Image (tube, rainbow, N blue to C red; front, top):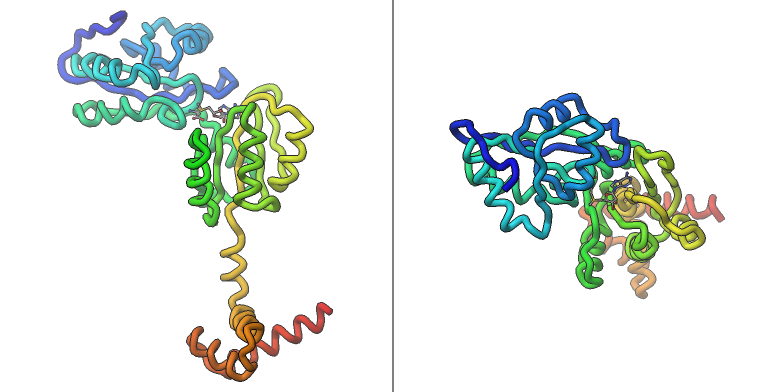
Length: 294
Ligand code: SAM
């Protein structure tokens, strides 16, 4: 195999290297230096990576490593590393291992006792998140939804009640379907940011509800690359922000079932572990609030 000989003693090092997601300048000095000095670069698509290498005048040999050859190529690359080679693994864009090949090779290397080192760089999901204006403290990266409808539904059901920000990847020809599904399962009024063509000439952040995004993209053909950032559910937050109204709601729902007011208050107090007096006061507060609103 081209470039897969090494002269060093002892195992080499595997670098997982971030590459630009659009703008070729988004490479670190360190990544360029290590790619230049490495013995071999394993790329998802060698033709694609060749353009990056040409831009930075890097002449390191390239070999292909992707989803469809990882089981045969992976062990060959590990053998190269065990012979002392320095290998840089890159995907077409962004961080290897994030909705891209790379994590399987990292696992093989770890199992073989080879050092795995990150070369941090661009990532579409985090770039979209930090400019979204949505909560960045806790988030879930969902990436691409599975292909089959059943599995898609399962994933969406799983994230439906999450309070944290959700990050989705999608190809342009499936964006409308994704927005339809998100709107149907997470709720059409949920806030979302559609980040398009990050770091490129036509970079754009569209902010609105899922329904607004769907309407827009039904009228406008989605073009380019997309990350959809969705706000976590606020339902649970509302419950914790307004607990004083909950006992009153329970009283009313018991009364709606035909239970007398006094008995409904007694049952509510017992169920909620508070006194009947507290239930009475909260009920009064709600009724006063309703009077003001009406
Ligand atoms: N490894 C990459 C990363 O770290 O972000 C992700 C690769 S994944 C195969 C490709 C998907 O990432 C695209 O379909 C799109 O959802 C998202 N993506 C990649 N580049 C993007 C860009 N410049 N703008 C918006 N989304 C992008």
